[in-house]
Image (cartoon, rainbow, N blue to C red; front, side, top):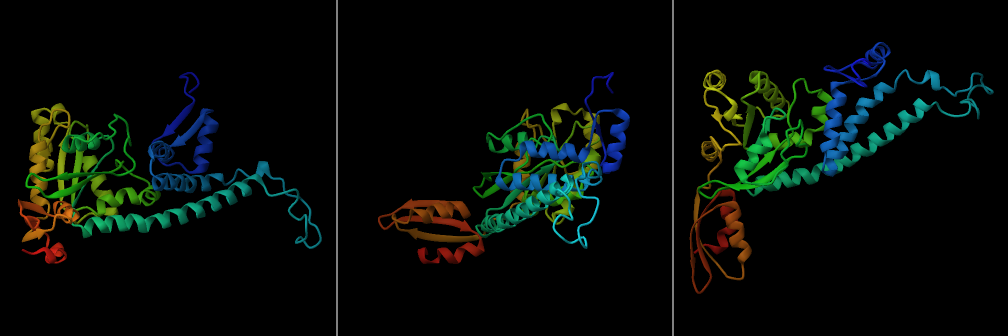
Length: 354
């Protein structure tokens, strides 16, 4: 290792603490496993308070068992007993360093769990609000570096961070959009999945993945130019199942189609016959994807003829937000609006019926 100039060895598996220490004894440099790498990448990209709290909690959960067995050489406990062993001084000059570390970690973990629990109602209220307002949600899910953020940029022309880097998105990015016939919905970009994602990380990042389970459609993005797209498909579907998203309609998108030749397309088409080939770079397939999403998204079916006074502009804004405006006419008494809305919103607008 030293001949290669390496100062760290990364194992592409999860190592037990004893395995890691044994490896370090052999290779004489720092050894870390894939879970530590994933956690480190997550910690670099966490932006929201909740994202940061969950990253720290997952890091501490990972660290805690790895403190075991390091205490013997640091022990500062007294060898003898004072009185019956229960009196003052029976613990020697103080706790061992390992016990102090463990106690601090347990305390910090309790604080973080409390914080995350307090954040959950606000997040659920936000999502419930989206459902109540009938703003359908499209979750963009996929393997890490499959091009989800680039695709979201193409679909919404929004300036979302795009990097050729693993896990460049950690916190879910939500963007508003509209179908060609005027139905509003949101896109949610989520963190990329990896094969064999350690279970404790799925739990720790559940809030990021909740964007998937709370959506109406999942756009499953696969890197069409990847050497093993079948493994990507399987990994993402497995994680979607773990977060209760199995029943949600799925649109499979093979991205980076500009890098895929005709024979590769045939193989991919064989995997998922109704998949859409897109290129976030050239724009290929973007219109087809938008049309497919419009088919799946719910439609407002109740037609209303409303007369809204001019001093109630917020009602007009609300109608645009929750339904589809068919016609607008400006009369002396107010704005006459013909609109199609979802059944649950029709009664709230009843007072303005014309």
